[in-house]
Amino acid sequence: MKIGVVGCGRWGSLITWYLDRLGHEMTLYGRASSPHMQRFLAERRNDLLTLEESVKLTCDLECVTRAEIIVISIASQGLRGFMEELRPLKLMGKTFVLCMKGIEVGSGKRLSEIVAENTDPSNEVAVWLGPGHVQEFYAGIPNCMVIDSENPSVKARLVEEFSGELIRFYYGTDLIGNEVGAAAKNVIGIAAGMLDGVKLTTLKGALMARGTREIGRLIAAMGGKEISAYGLCHLGDYEATVFSPYSHNRMFGERLVRGESCDFLAEGYYTAKALVQLADRYGVELPICRGVYEVLYEGRDLREGLGSLFQRSLKQEF
Image (cartoon, rainbow, N blue to C red; front, side, top):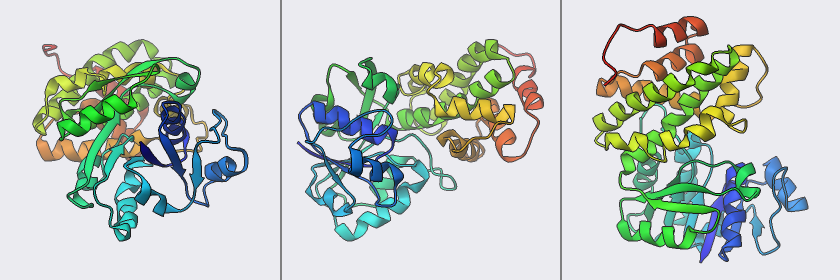
């Protein structure tokens, strides 16, 4: 199968490496200005992995016209702009697979909605979500993930073609819930890092339990299945986000509260703003996500914010 991967960062390069091992005809696209792509072109490697000679490397976006499946792994807030770049290529009959986790700030759109609204109706859209880190996959440590799509035949084809010893795929049954849950877990990851930063790691248990509850409420309000918050795309991804030293979102939250420099903005930074907008739109309480938002965007004191999360009025758990 001819597959083009857009995005040469950590996850895009890992996907390319993984699918190449499964025998697919792989092309990795990156912008010529990208330091990651420049290194791949020069050395065929980054700090984590090496790509075989069988993988084609290119800075020519027209490579996607020759692919049956287009895997996208870029910053979520840049997806709409990227779809506009693809418009002149007049792509038809392609399957887009989104391997990013986010919600568009302002519109509150899920990523699959952005693609569907900005491409020919003959193209299909799917999402590839769930737990796992590049470092662990490259070291041979397996994990379980989810593929979801509104088209059952697309979902079945991708699960069959993408399954291997490293990744066991499950069929997703709730596109809304899986996308919202996957995006929201990054905000919970930032909250976990904040707890680590002020030596309140013991509260992560409460964070996980209550975080899952509030995201479940939002999913249900948006028309999804509340139980999806307890699946691989949200609760199932907590270990890799709330505890892992590899988690960008957890690391970002920890460095932030310690006053340490951080040379990147984690995806959860933007998602926190989008979730608060959705909470207001649907009338759903998201105390944890709102607390993170207030610390990030309104300069609220972290300990005051944490106090509001864990000293709320007495109530039943369920």
